[in-house]
Image 1 (cartoon, rainbow over the protein chains, first blue to last red):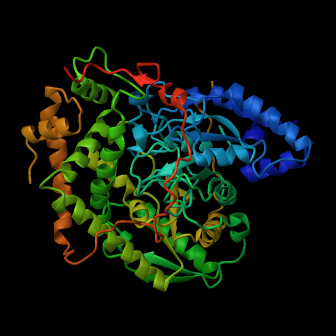
Image 2: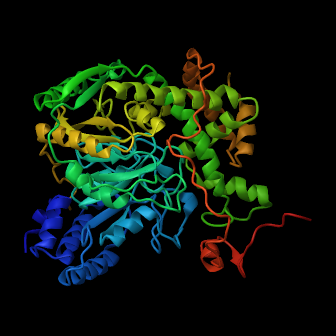
Length: 496
Length: 95
């Protein structure tokens, strides 16, 4: 048996092969992760740990492997963002209002993972209802980024909203994790924790059983150590699902196979509007280096224009809150979740359950959404934003006449200090400036670790693909990954 | 357009969220900051542009209007803050 550190630092693909070849058992592997999670409590990456259940799932996997019946992810321990409903395991969305909600059903994405033999280690922390870019709005407290600057002991945010999943992957607390991405919530945390995060095309993964935030933008995807691992995870997470009417009626291809091969002749677009003021020179330099890496491998670099880029964030902050205010109307203190004590009438029950149950950022967004949908303001805000969304999507369609993928920075900066951006909501929103356009247009995007800042913090590059062309996207991402040769991991300062 | 304290109270009521009186003024400031920033959309002439109604190219799927699931009253009420005999208990609504 290998040392526990060697086990947990494996990639998903390496662990899959080791299990298949009988070099390690799922029980050994799962046990190593359960211990690592136990030792990493200071990171607060998990809301609910399910170590006992994980070991049972691992034993069942070992029996199936022994009989030669293993699935695509047989025996591989994963972490699940606590936005995916898991039958019999508390699901909180990091909100007080869900209370001790224990779903009597399973989300399609997680069901696909368990059907393929994967093992659940636990449910990871996130921003409340996935609303945030730093994991600081969680009712269960902030997550600490496993990375620290090499000149400071200050705790940094892991990005958000999938901050717990990102921290768990970066700290070797799981082989891979699930995330969801409404405006950048997979790609931004992956980038600032030095790992890979893939947001698939809208409709590629079923939304059934995922706590809804903004239904026309939400999409589940993998957070992994490598591009190959993202391809492996997506193959199982994606499916055609009758329970989600927006699930795409397209067969799921073998992404691991599509990812292979040269990028010779691939046309890579560089959108000039992504050069924005106030972005550190390090990010700009990394972007240029990324284009050079792809060019050196035979890609053709083309400058393209996405003229409505700067309107994407304000458009998002109308559309997403509008959908959220509607989706979150279901939390009424009646059918499930938190209920305020001693309500004097039904309105008091609703108002106080929601007032006490929702945190500050969620309340702010529900109020924004209610306002932009209210009589007299609908046309000025919501209808206008939906038109802008059409223009933003058209920008991409035109750009993709000239190129096959786009290359951009993933974030406007590295991980920042806990508490440094919570006072001003607008400053926090700007973290998603490079990622949010992709959700508005429903396209796939991936963040790939590409380098370190001068003080040792990870930075990522983003690639954006055509709808349902995750294969080409992954192939380009792999080219960036190979050229960047990012082998860094955070020092394990949290291990007690 | 500026959001005043009465507007905050009105939308909080519409949203069925009890916002404490001490939070009303700060919330008005926060919302104003956000709405002023959103005003930049006014720069764009979107006359004649169709509003996006679906981000996916495919048509919404149809299915037969028939019962495909049900009989799960236990599961449906198991997370209720208060329930009895498969009913949700709420304060008296009708006198």
